[in-house]
Image (cartoon, rainbow, N blue to C red; front, side):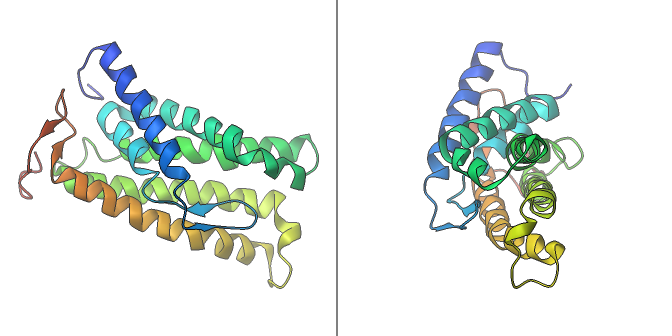
Length: 202
């Protein structure tokens, strides 16, 4: 069975709290790139954890909701820099819907494949960040290429621009989930406070 066995109300409350936390942490951004994208203080962590606890479907849906909130709260200004329905759709889906759904999906990837919780979450945080980077990379190549002045190619521009802040997002996410995994058993119904054994991962 995918996901932790808890009642629907508890799951909804946990998810709402994690989305709110992720949204709040997204404003704690020591670095913001000029055309969107930022280095935040662990804002990806809550969505990765929800994916780890409740599986692909629930994690992806949580990420989509978070992504839409990010677009409405912080990303509407980006629409002024692109033109056309196609560009708007790529911006919505690549930079927000799919990008943030990736966090929940990545979090769920290794829940059952890797017994050790710390390793599973670390891998999940890494691949969540990688999947999100791919989404932003595609967006950079397709709709942000006109801002690639000084770069030899739009591919290099997108890779460098998005890779810079996503590298730090990845590092902070992996560190965040690893530290939390040392104190909480995310597979338990009630988020038991514990110090898991590295060998057992439980």
